[in-house]
Image (cartoon, rainbow, N blue to C red; front, side):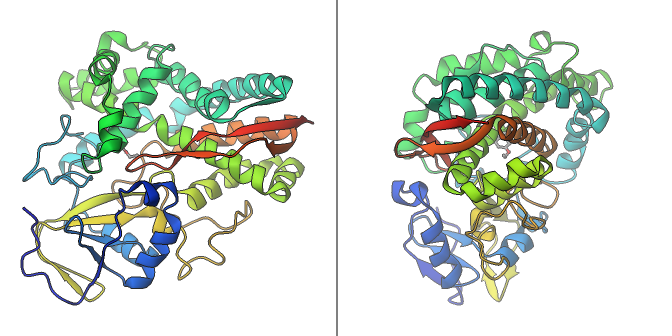
Length: 402
Ligand code: OW7
């Protein structure tokens, strides 16, 4: 089953398991090990290759014709294994199909559609921040990180606004679904039928408010660029990738600030740093740990020969803390030059929603900076394990009002 017959000996082998609970709870020490082991490492346990250095991550992502997404960007090779859901026509495709579909999606995210979003985000961020400050202490995961994106995204996109639980449950399935069929995947699939039914319903034209971003995807169907079924799948991409990712970044960002009061003070003194602060959180924390590519032909990568049909795990989280590229990569520095980080990926598949993600993060950090003088951790934060996403399960905090 593993397409690695004739494996060259040039690459190092490792028994690190990137889908174990220990790895997912804190991936950075084993990622450092993988970076130091070599530019390309063979993961014996799964019969896949991995890259965790900045240069190799960038090199793979810049060659989509050799390092293909069409066999899936999870560990399952669609040539030999069955995807758990109908493949995404945005994420799990290559050019030219990808180029065409992405253009339809990108139109919905054009800047002219986004000016009114900033207004919604700022207003909702202000309301939420004021409410939390008045409470004094709360759990920054369910009461903040999970609330904000699940409130503003459905409002902006034009779907039902009471679907928080379904949206988060679906995101957990989608991101666990890129890993092996382990206990995390199985647990996230509990109650899948109802959740998938709800999501599928939201993807139909009739569920989308005509003034939301989602309706702009169906404009592509009206123009004959995609079929009605394809438009529904493109909407599904937004509901798959647009919630848990921002929830994760916001939760981890609050934790970063709680642990680094000097950085919070800097943001309070100059709120125009909010945008770069969010970017630094995405770099430092890498909500998406990594995705796979599959070689479409034998390929050379930093002196290592990869056979055709090989899965390569591309660690964004490794690249984002590679000391070969970053100065003091583990330091949270909201003034840092963050350009070149891989938190949104790079190349043709780079995050199509990153403009919205940044707008959400910036709006929330800015609103909090205006109202929160300081953060205290009142309990131990706990990670929420997922095969592809880093996030928190609980983050008990108290805030001192500004
Ligand atoms: C999709 C953040 C990566 C994703 C993730 C999961 C699903 C999809 C996209 O982007 O359905 O296109």
